[in-house]
Length: 356
Image (tube, rainbow, N blue to C red; front, side, top):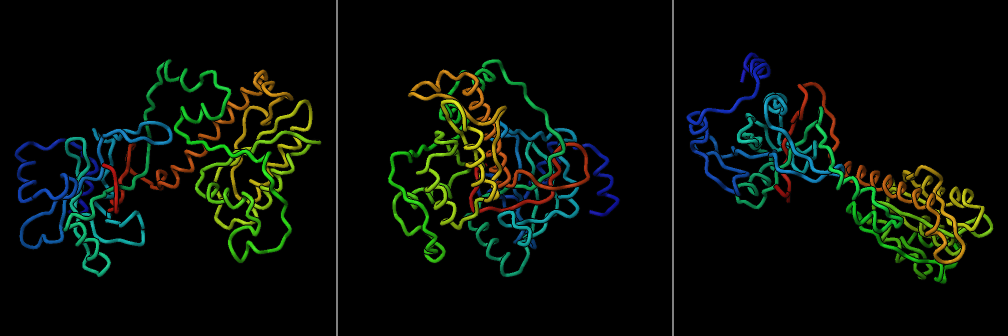
């Protein structure tokens, strides 16, 4: 495609092909894998395939259901048709082919690609040819979106009268595991340095059990009663050893602390617990007030309506932050410039596994 043709294509709105044009273009293409990747037949096309890289099927993101609009000028394929490349597992330093052309058809995005001939590309080409490698995803920059208004039922479901973290988290798709430490015999750190050599604490009293749980978690909530304007001593001993003995990266895991007192000392305890997060690169979730609730005897905290509202808002904010972090990990956010409003596609990636 010449520069003049690309410029004309950019000015011209996307339109559906006539049946005769579609039939002519699809001639010589045989299905390989569920119509997602198709080999192009004919001499000189041994390394050429047609694949589908996007559709209007709903996809669950942290903000709800995402549906890509493929009508009109909502999908900008200019960069795909000019400098688009084929990546492997979204790794930008693993270019394994080029995009010959891209187009929209039946609310789906299609691209014709040709694999390179180097050794690394050859391995992926053979996997696609045999049907072993089936996953396809695209990288795009989001230029705009339309939000769907929630129904009163949905809003009530999210804001319902919920004073317990587990209930709110379950309603919003967050798995919660509670670990009680107050009745455990956990000693303090003795600064022996053994964890630097072995990767775990020398004292096997429960701290080492928590380490893999923290590594897998997207967030950590630390809650403590207030003793002399300070957190529970057993909890502090556990946290000192847990954060010191673990070497895995805690950056961007979301942290939240909660203090419960009869009357005073919540702010001091809240500040003490947050220090574990702020020394580890962990964003701290906040609420509409300092994260505290009041009560002395069992069940009294349930009567603190303002405290329960603070907990609800904290759970909501923490859930949002964890979902944003997960979205970042899944490469939902991607950079890109130029193009019309809508989704600008700029590369196609083959993956080892993918849900279409």
